[in-house]
Image 1 (cartoon, rainbow, N blue to C red):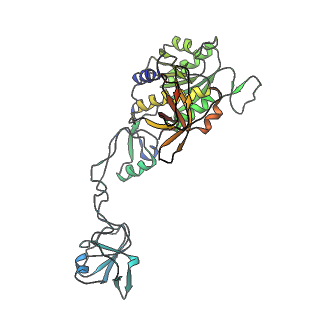
Image 2: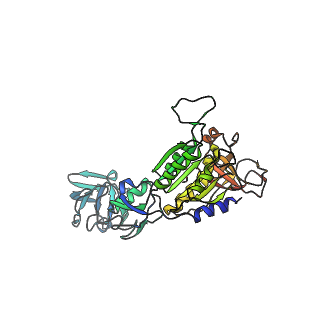
Image 3: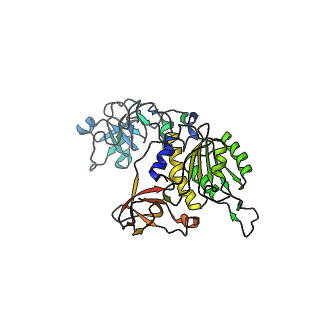
Length: 401
């Protein structure tokens, strides 16, 4: 069996880069950027007034003038005015600083009588106060977003501010999520006592879409070698990534590895020294398709999807890699098998500001209900049995931040 590190390395080594496409900027949230987004102009593009009030020259105030005839009014979006000596201009937040002005006093600190604005006697006037200087955020041509960034709603503001209507992003691959098994029945369909509800497929689809992959389709195939062969052949033609669930163990009805081999899918590994998820299978199709065959137990399937499928999709999309995230165990944990343990956890913040991971017990790897209370899982190395509270361990969130 491969170690978890060897398995992930094998998956990433077999992963090809997805192509690039150009889409409307407004539709790009969640997609992976493939271009540099450069500043169209300085930000702010002018000396911007930050308070409603009056604008005047500090030299007039310093010479003893504390009451100013109001020359005019300038609002945000108005063309810039030139201030006359000894006068002030009523100014609005967001407006361009008038020419010859270098001082702003808020409207709350002035009194207007007979067309003159008088500054309160106890107000401390400061030159350049409440003025946001041109280019102080960034200069024209600055690289505001770079390739590998998964575009967030906050990034849309940056893209729009740069005047971009379209952006280049990684192609969102066609993914087929395939549930196998005679015992599975979809929600809403009549069910017999000997059958179970189909949950892995919808869960994997949801996890993939939460990581930005919208082109996921789900299929259910019964445990019949001929049916599997026909349907998987079609999915290999239609998709770049296949994620199967079930049919990869050692049972007589576990046809998936045999059928994939018949279809020309090269197996790169089968079984990993981990729990849950030990029976996982991975290979590549004749056209470079990534084929993941996850165990059928729900906890195993979800862990393997998060541990291997998501990183592969990130690599192919060009997502900038982040350093590992750590959490401290909130209680002692013991795990005897010589396997890497992926322990589901609930996260809380400790008083010292650290992230604490509370182990959540699952009643076997089929206990998907227990996962609802978890935020992810921690990775406990295979060469250790006892882990004391406070031990720093690698954290994998279901939904990466």
